[in-house]
Amino acid sequence: MSDDQVKRIRAPFDDATAHSLRAGDRVLISGVILAARDAAHKRLVETLDRGEALPVDLRGAVVYYVGPSPAKPGQAIGAAGPTTSGRMDAYTPRLLDQGLKGMIGKGYRKPEVVEAMKKHGVPYLAAVGGAGALIARSIKKYTVLAYEDLGPEAVAAMEVEDFPAIVVIDSLGDNYYETGQAPYRQL
Image 1 (tube, rainbow, N blue to C red):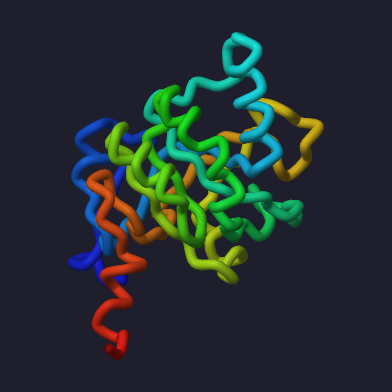
Image 2 (cartoon, rainbow, N blue to C red; image 1 turned 60 degrees about the vertical axis):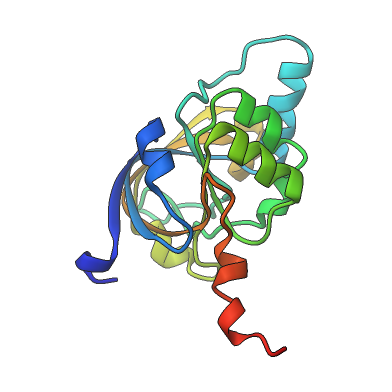
């Protein structure tokens, strides 16, 4: 990505950042994002169902759907490619209600998730599948925050620098998976 074609943004996201992103935007994210996969999402929602406080504050948070491999000596993290976002769809609307402000993964989202994203003004970004070793280079620190027993599926804070992603669905519901493919469809 050349610098003139990419947006440099910070995480956690504030409302202005979340609303400024448009489907198709290429971004480099610096700051702190959360790592969590389906097992952690399930526990977070179960915690809410019991009326208990979450172990992490989701207000403004950006979550990356990742289960990283073990770090090699001298590295913060091993390969850190995205997991399929649809695995989190059952839990996502509840977590958006808690203030989650961005999501990074790969693949499509269910219509009810897109509606919840529009309601809360939240974008969904994609990281490149199969590029976990390259993505890991942008992760400078990895700290488990909750559910350590889940191993690589625990909730963790990741300090990132120039983490590459593409806005797939923006806060208005515009979907780059649809618009990006449209010129190549035959009628």
